[in-house]
Image 1 (cartoon, protein in one colour):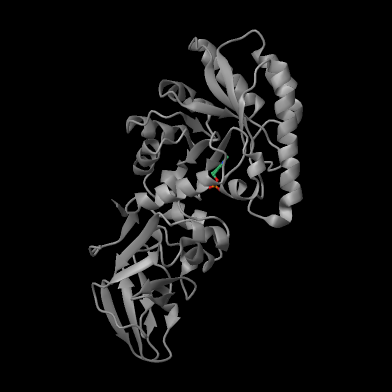
Image 2: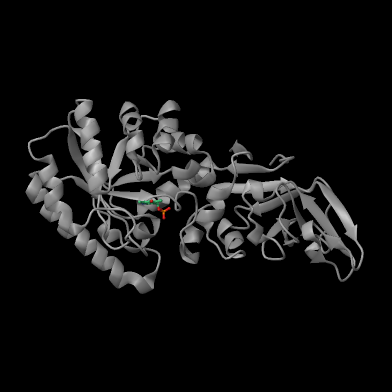
Length: 367
Ligand SMILES: *Cc1c(COP(=O)(O)O)cnc(C)c1O
């Protein structure tokens, strides 16, 4: 593969296709698949990922905010797009771009109905979100009657689907809690269908839900992290392929004498003769300060080089004393050989956080 020559995020669309097929193999053929592409497709490239997923025949996309959905439509995406966390101030735009809102509270429902009436909409598709235990967003089980009353004798909106979200789908110790959430969701669905006289389709599972609770796949599932190559478990990580690889190069090498220090606030102090490499990548690129001072590490020539001293805005320094390397050599921060999950855990965080932190100023290369 060509030398990168600078800091880049390589995006492997074949890995994406592999992950999609793997996750689909866990599901019934008729189950619809929603690709979660919020936060620039988990820090990669939202448009490139969405175009590939659309070409693979994905049924739905989800984003968190209206603005993200607008970007997808402007890029030519025609697949239905669910907006998980819309705000009333963006409802007009949401409608203009034919995005489907997740309505999660009485206030949001009433505000959306108001806009729908003003715009004289007819059967506009909406998803109703129920809280079954995460206690983050959603109507209560006891709101079924309230919701149906709001819709009685009105046709501006149509409940296309209902959804809920598991609180701990990746944690086997929480199986009982997850099973209870699933049970509550089923009960809600039965009660709502009876009241509405039709049956909106249902979706509840995220990636770990697909793996651990396939019996609750209902009519659609929503996957994010799995598509990007991470399965929240060592076993599943082996079945998936990381889509994003963060690579950089060595800008400069320094020989450090005993007693010298490296970086801001002299945070690294050398006890012996050390060789350090400076890399063009810092906290403004998404490598937070918690990766500094020996916690995080990168890979050079297949060997681990710890990040020493404080992370700077545009640079980090790594210890390469034991590595035979020169200025211009390639550096792997995370990717197929050093997973984003392993990199993240060096700083007590998770793959989701490091992936979505990678800043937009880093060049994306689609492979
Ligand atoms: C982000 C998100 C997902 C995707 O979860 P993964 O664990 O990345 O698969 C699914 N559903 C909702 C409501 C989300 O906010």
